[in-house]
Length: 98
Image (spheres, rainbow, N blue to C red):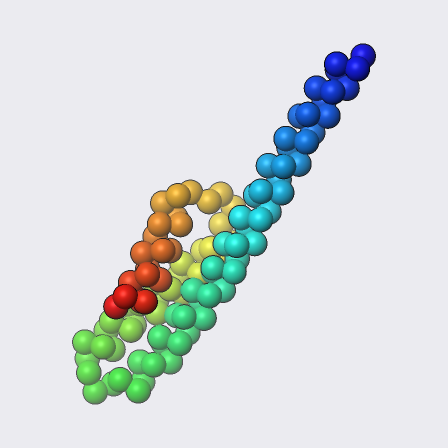
């Protein structure tokens, strides 16, 4: 009887650990999503002050759209894949390097 209780407790602990890990990742992803949305808003707002340079306007427009889209997706995504995280890192990394 003790072995059965121990096994069910272990399975329950594993499920709780997986849920806690997923919840932590969701929180981090939500923070990254809000940051990306904020950066997209800033880039969109900066378009007007750079209206004399069409290349900058185009760059800021594309960057703002990508950051806003990824940020919204990060807020609603249910399953996180490494490729999704890589896309977000590439978009926002390009803004930092860029």
